[in-house]
Length: 629
Image 1 (spheres, helix red, strand yellow):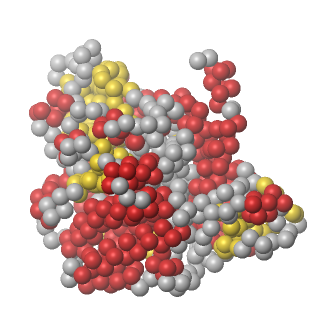
Image 2 (image 1 turned 180 degrees about the vertical axis):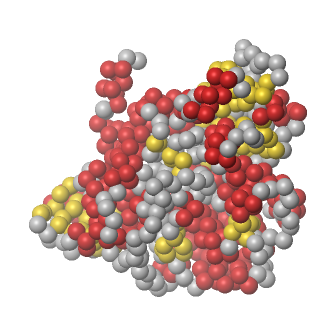
Image 3 (image 1 turned 90 degrees about the horizontal axis):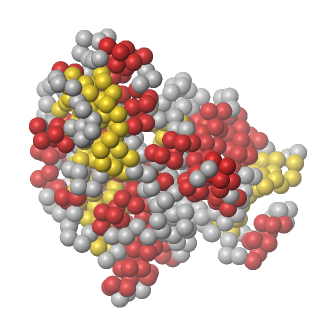
């Protein structure tokens, strides 16, 4: 298609409006949950309250099934106003209008994404005593641009299909990204062409790039001869004698060949670019992890691109920690997990990278991180017969066709089980909790293993629309609580990798509370209930029953302390992606704020919380894992 046609299609106003709308929703979701609600600056107002509200909004509220959401912006002496589909026990508002803004010198103004971002960031700058965060502002706008490209050019179909075909499309169907991140589709480092060529949401697939490296420079762990053969260069790419092939993401290959230390090694012949070739791999939702049907491994590459909070490189110590954790968990935790046959871990048993052992530390580290590849076991051998694996993040969302996949799954189950849609949703959620929650909590409270089961790390196996299996991945982000994990780690693991594995109990609970409860289950309930407040309350009572059941069988004092607190309505720690990006923090230094517990709201006991954003020393560049986004 000629570039002029591309540009014309790209400026299609339908897609611009939808991308703007979804960008606004993500930014407002963050601000409401992370800032306004904890600070007591948000309320859902009755329809007839505001006589001075904009006419368009008053008509919307009077004629539709909607409520008004008011957000106070005290530092600007202003407020935001928009229509929502009623209140939510978990603060998951479904927006039904664009936002209007009014400050003391001016009347109501309709805001697009750019103006909303400027207003909110100005308010936060004044509150925190920090300069306006122009970097975050550009990330928000950049995310909107990427969203528009996705909507215009994606080849992901409306119907995913069954089996592994359905799995591939589910990984590539996340058109709008994280619902609670200010810049869910920001891709710093990708050009427009890169976005089209390498983004999963485009339906992309591509061959790998290969370098020939001397065998003595290859550093690996967990690989046998058969595994190395899997990584071998494809036919047509000739590997010189005494060298081995090392695959790299093709975007990363271009990045590496712009680095001085790589160019020096290419000129000397120590590294030899072979080019791109071989069969097609498909990027999954994380962008840098690739899937190939039939391959025994997912390939998790380094790509020096910032996605959401982090630059997605495999830090040298994360290469070691991922493989070590896979080794010790398989040996010491797998026997416990045998009690949960529907729950499976996707281990990361090996890594391979380049290591010039004689180089000075900074160059050596850059090489290991730039070429680092983590191999994750495929889920294909783990699938039960007739099961279609689906990414949880895509299941609990809307796609660009305004289709809600979990609603379709519930409908399938309702027809199969011959029950009402409402009953099917309750049964669906009950089964999902049964598969996911007990093994995650058991691992935490009895063994001190902190998984990260957020929506992009969980794959749900569906059979007749009903959850049959769950798979948890990304062990590179898994941690061990030092006071509970008693099995020894391998003696050869270095101090930095060992330190990256260990966690305190408090941090462990924060991570689980955010990943399992807020990121995963809050969104699951939101899409299963679909604006039915009675059904939402019923689903939270199902969750309450599962918590009670787990505690009945647990003798962990820690479990009774924190889970008992949830049952009493205590608030839940939430990782604030907005505050993290506002202060340019690494993901590992994210701030947690307390959010409303749905069980407290059910009992009409919403605890008051207060949030103060403090000015602190922060990093200019946040580089970390892609563990909790």
